[in-house]
Length: 110
Length: 113
Image (tube, rainbow over all chains, first blue to last red; front, side, top):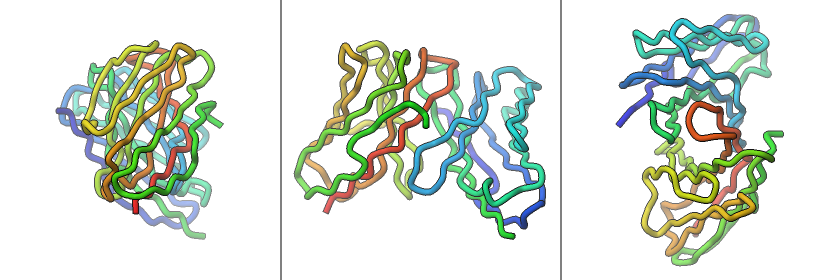
């Protein structure tokens, strides 16, 4: 079965710093989704990537998909306290179910 | 607000009991997914329904069952509850099955004592 590994597991950065979160799949990626979750709350959809080389941005968050490496990266520019939370990548692996990585917990301090 | 409604928000019950979690998908979404999130297991896919029919099954225990009704709302039934069933249960919906993003509800926090 397909697995998604995220790195790092947690990240503590100072406000204003840039950061990158990676998501690597054990199998071919047919679609990659990024979500953000605040503690104890639901997942908020950020963006979806479908094609190799695709890059999308949402405010100061940019995600890229490298199909050959079966990997996606999420980059936050000039982090703010509002970016704090857990970021999860999800993939459909050409099945109907969406599986998720274990998440990257981000803390941003002033 | 994702448009997905889950009730109740919190549920506290004893071992051996049975509970029902309810989910109303976003207007127009035909597909409903159920996930379980616990600290040690992360977000685990349980089951998916599409327009009333079961579409995909994940690591759902035999003590758990679900259904999607003609009005597209869904219920997840958990029976013979054990302490280990304590978790956040999420419902998500999407327009179609496959390559469309899932929109999540705020979850039901189940505590089994």
